Image (cartoon, rainbow, N blue to C red; front, top):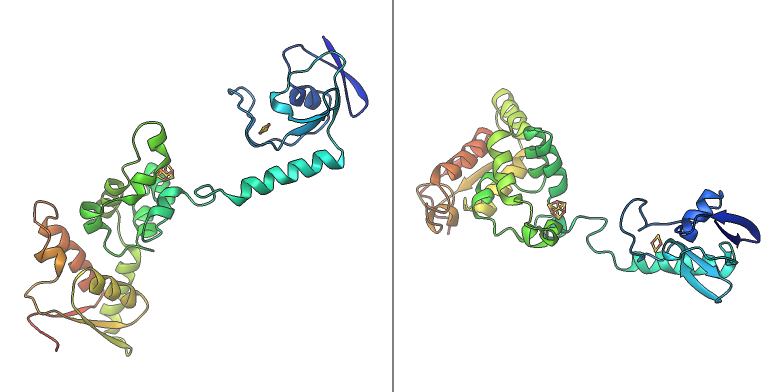
Length: 268
Ligand code: SF4
Ligand code: FES
């Protein structure tokens, strides 16, 4: 056994212990962040700093082995200041820690981790409704989105990114858009709203505007110069890439919410 002093209190510890473990065993609290018992230790957060009086240095206690006669200080102002500085450093640059990197990379800012969790729990309708808070046409995007979220996915550091785009498509196939269904029911019962909006073009922007405005209680009419809805989705993207029935399903849903379409109508 090794004898050492922590805050002037003599304690004993096993030879292979760290100062952090010895202190905790003796009931002396030292904060820690990156240290996790049972896992390979790689001191990096510096939150567990203590002062080794024999060398007069500040050291991370989770990486410091106990030694005979060692004297450790865990509570001086100097130690507290160094821990505070470590936390300030950590908080000054932590992009992708509070908000997942996939969500930060998504141009729509969609809550991707929430969608993933709900799909993992087989809650497909709930997953779709999370998607629809930010993305009106997930079934279409599930085919053509370039998926910047997958480039940012942390899982890449281990093997491959989560298949976020395919998961979104899957949720769109399996889930039910509850808010759209409610809007459709209201439209059937009460007819057109008094607040009306005209939208020119039924491309992705026009369809998205109609979807969200209809949810907000407006009655939308889309004027489209072509004979069918979809704009660039239908007329510029090859069918092998985006099957036309996928566009039709999204358009039908928006129509069911009460949106009127006027085709072959050029607004000048
Ligand atoms: S693992 Fe990938 S998909 Fe999951 S939350 Fe992290 S970045 Fe997003
Ligand atoms: S707990 Fe992070 S360096 Fe010790």
